[in-house]
Amino acid sequence: MANLKINFAGIQAPNPFWLASGPPTNSGYQIMKAFDQGWGGAVWKTLGVPVVNVSSRYGAINHRGNRVVGFNNIELITDRRLCDNLREMEEVKKYFPDHAVIASLMVQTKKEWQQIVQDVQNAGADGIELNFGCPHGMCERGMGSAVGQEPEVLELITSWVMEVAKIPVIVKLTPNISDITEPAQAARRAGANAISLINTIQSLVGVDIDKFVTYPIVENHSSNGGYCGPAVKPIALNMVKNCAQHPLVQIPISGIGGIENWRDAVEFLLLGASSVQVCTAVMHYGFGIIRDMTAGLEQYMDSHGFETIDQFVGKALPNVKHWEDLNLKYSIKASINEEKCIGCQLCYIACEDGAHQAIDLNDDKNNRIPKINEENCVGCNLCSLICPVEDCITMVRKDDGNEHLTWRQRTEANDVPTTFDDALAGGNSHTVPTPLEALKR
Ligand SMILES: Cc1cc2nc3c(=O)[nH]c(=O)nc-3n(C[C@H](O)[C@H](O)[C@H](O)COP(=O)(O)O)c2cc1C
Image 1 (cartoon, rainbow, N blue to C red):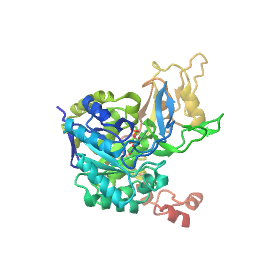
Image 2 (tube, rainbow, N blue to C red):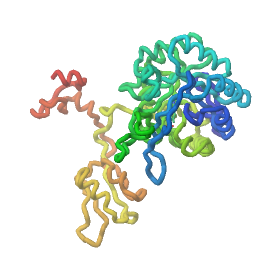
Image 3 (spheres, helix red, strand yellow):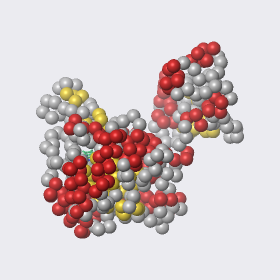
């Protein structure tokens, strides 16, 4: 039977599902309610010098009915008094000693950082998360993502915290940076016990085209916000993978971004996270989603023979390769199941106009089922992705299954042009240039 308990960088929790810092963790009342329903941990809404928030604060992109796909907010850190939050934190720990309570913090000076760390330790927090990620409102004041974008500053502030921290410290990273592994390495250098990612992505979610103002609207104006929800999951997964694979990071990772169900969580775990955090999905569906999450994770682990979470953390990492190492000889072709095809011809239109003209209409005008032209099909997947009928278009392997040849091997064998001049001359260059070398050529 699967055991969901985790020890994340020294923080114990009954399961890997934690609430991310945000509106669902605004108060002790909410956190106790969430623990009662099955959440394993909670990262408290970021504490610091309380702010005054605006209204409205949120915007969204909705698809599939009214389901939120992307969520945007211009909310800042807590607007509640520090003393109230600390009192409630103590209370939560009294009633839920085995659950993980993490204090998210954001202040400015060394004195403030060291003071607030001691305050939350005294209140019984199990861990601390440094919010170096908020990309709106706080960064203009030199905090949040303004720190996360400067690895040296991040390292300095984290080292101030480490001087006084007696409980594990997690550094929460901003995705608003070109290489996420740089601040991740800085966190490790400063002695942080773990990292968490991602915070929100700086965004404008849309424009009211009659009022000429972006959303969310505050009177007649607006401001850029932070994007999250299902739309950001692919970006978060890639960043988690990059950190997990980097030899100079190698500290526990808490994965965040677009997690709505146990499958999303398992994806983060397989790419190297050893706990996960959820915000938007709880804002949308409530704390109750945890029941399906824990049941689904248990079933998944049982069906794969995993007894503990650690047994499959990072299990997909060895299969994420550089593009140059993928097998160029691997070949698949589309195949249409004529019994399932409803004759909508969306695949024909997509392939004809947007891909490789590998789907032909039937000569018989009364037969709306299209045919695959295997000679033109490059196995791109487009038709199977846009087909509205499940399993109607599948991709079938057509190579001999034995031959293996990568672009790197071809380059080493001098078999492929790597510069524009080479390509024009039909010749080859020996090595793969870096972008700078390529420019100089
Ligand atoms: C309305 C709102 C408020 C948030 N406030 C905070 C915050 O105070 N501190 C923090 O570290 N992250 C905050 N976040 C970011 C979330 O913790 C999380 O990193 C991000 O939303 C991605 O996860 P999700 O896709 O599950 O929402 C907030 C997010 C939202 C939507």
